[in-house]
Amino acid sequence: MERRLAAGWLTPLLSYSTQLWIAVGIVFLLGILGLFLIHYFYSKVQIDLKSFIFRREDIEREHWTPSDLFDSAVFSIIKLFLTQSVTKEEIPRSIIGSYFVGLFFLFSLFLTSTFSSGFSSIMTIPRYQDPIDTIEDFFRSDLEWGATQEVWTTSIANTDEVCM
Image (tube, rainbow, N blue to C red; front, side, top):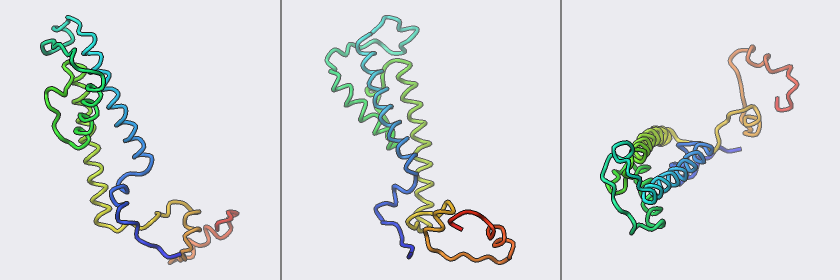
């Protein structure tokens, strides 16, 4: 079996494993949902506890429809994932909303730094199709294996495994 380089368009996707990409997608969707709910409940409930819960003046937002709030949440989370600044109007006016956006921004900083470090390692070292992680992967790769000392080969010589 001949080892070939992975396709060029796959290079940005190789920074993370499949499970991590799924986790990033789930966090992305949960971030949109969380920011939308914070916007929605803040615009609906407008309680007069400004000194305890809210840090800014309570603003009437009756002209905001749920679709406007959802659009704002989607674009705010996209901005945070791309490490762009979120405007003052896009941040919910409650303390909870400010903490949510701030913590999500910190999360996106960690996410982008790990992505860029993984991406730079993939760009500097050529990535071949599938790494060999297990004995079964090595067996399927049809690579020949040799050792410099006999101890290495005798340790697997009397095994009951089919792959050996």
